[in-house]
Image 1 (cartoon, rainbow, N blue to C red):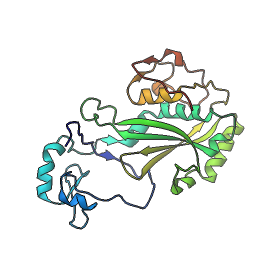
Image 2 (image 1 turned 180 degrees about the vertical axis):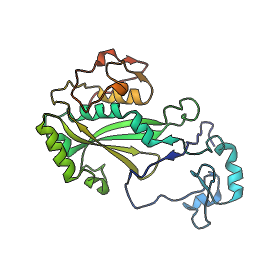
Image 3 (image 1 turned 60 degrees about the horizontal axis):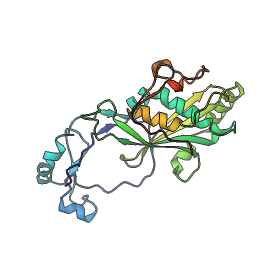
Image 4 (image 1 turned 45 degrees about the vertical axis):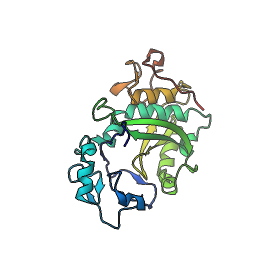
Length: 257
C-alpha cells in the first residue's frame, strides 16, 4: 500500500439527491489485500458494515482487523455534510449560476442549460482543512440534455420551473437556474439545487468566474466584503460586486471556455 494512501471520511447525504443509475457498483471488502476482491465482488461471501462509521464493509473479522491500522484514522460518525456545504456557499454558487447564465446572449439560456459542479471529498478534511470537506475539481455549463446528463436528470427542470423562469425574465431577471453537483467519489449520486436569479441581464460578467468559485470554495482565495459572505444575495438586483478587491493566495484563475 502506498505511503500517501488516505481514507476519506464518510459523508452524510439528505434525501434531496438524484440517483444517476440503477446499476450498483461492485461491493468489495475494504481491506485492499482481501483475496475475494480479485473476484470483482465479495457479495458471495457476505459483507458486514463497520458499526461505527457505517462507510466501509468487510467480508470477515480477519479482514477488518488487518485493515484497522489504516481505517482507524477515518473511522468516525459521518461528519462531512454535503447539504451543510451547499448551504454555506449558497451565496457563492448563486453568483456562479448568474455568471454562467450571462455567458450567452440568449435570454432563455437559464431554461435550457444548467450549471454542473464536479466535486470530490477533501482527503485532508479530517486534519489539515476540517472546514473544507469538499473540493470542486471542475465546473461546466451544460445543456439539460447533454451527454453528461443521464436520463433521470433530464426531467429535473420541470414545466413549473420553466414557467417560474419565464416569470422572472418578464420582470427583467435572468430566470430559474438548475445547479447539479456531481460527487465523483460517491458513485451514482448527484445533488441538485434551483436558484431564482432576479439580477438583470446587463449585470457585469467576469470571464474568470470559474476560477473565483473554485478558489473560494476550495479555500485558496479570500474575497473582500464587497462580493461575499452572508451579506451578498444574488436573488436581488445589486450593484457591481467589487471583484477587483479579491485577494488571491497562489491560485490560478481559469478562463472561460
